[in-house]
Length: 406
Image (tube, rainbow, N blue to C red):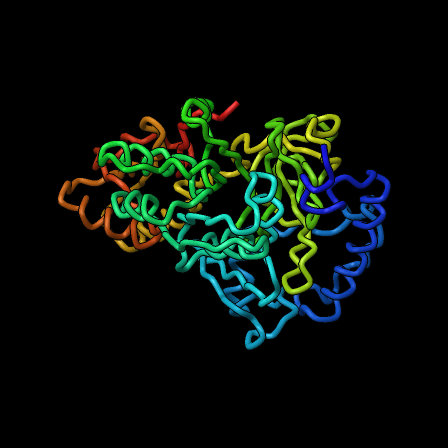
């Protein structure tokens, strides 16, 4: 494959060169964090990748508590608030900074692997408010020299009509929403023939959906990232696992611990983002995956993960947003007379759906619960009132019944 098929030569460097560079970057990161982020003032020095496992793990629950105790960033950001470009608040709540550097979230690499090139118009269907997903994909496209239509979420008919008028080459958004737009365009008799590429994330990319896009002649590839970290891994045209981004260090550990697992074993994904502004070190994503053997047939030499294989905790990603047990507890505090509740997440066709089953004696509480849940999660959800004592007493708050993609 020609060198210009790659985003840069970092993607095809030797593993020894990559490990040496990452070790040096890690040492700089830890030193800078110790000096400029109060939370990391007592962090031990770390000069090699082999020593990384000795550093403490940062979990989302601890991050939420740390930010609440020392707002807005919990003493974990090295750049002053006034020097940032944007500040986001994701469900949790978790506050995420964005510095004014080019491609801060590092999504240009993933979009380039999808096929996006300078001058191509990106139809970006991620949200631009509260959460950073819209900004992540836009900044990546702009770094490639691509204009962006900031479409945001929802408004299916308007999305289809705008795409017919603007004639974008690439879509970015959740895996299922592109299908929804294309079906609406078919219904309206609109020509979306210029739309040849798709870059999807924020939800399960199921084999049936892959096949549907392939039948229409579309190249739709996926990536894996989080609002805290930015890009973690991305798919190439080889479609064999997700290649790790060059700006992160990924470990697969035994769930609930920081103990590394051998390659091939399924465990929790821990990520150290080599971000000088927000040096998250050994951040536990709560996601399960495993390292694949060898390198990608596309020629990129970084390690690969199998992709998203489930959750190490009860949190779940729905339509691009995380839903957590803490949010369900918030709903129950806001609506008295509900003894216990369980959020059921399922798949209807290609679309994520949620239903909150709540134990209560008064069926009239359903609308109040629906409103409280939408306020807490930013997602719509059905509510089913069930008799007191009917839910299992097993501590499960979120039951994700969606199939794990193969």
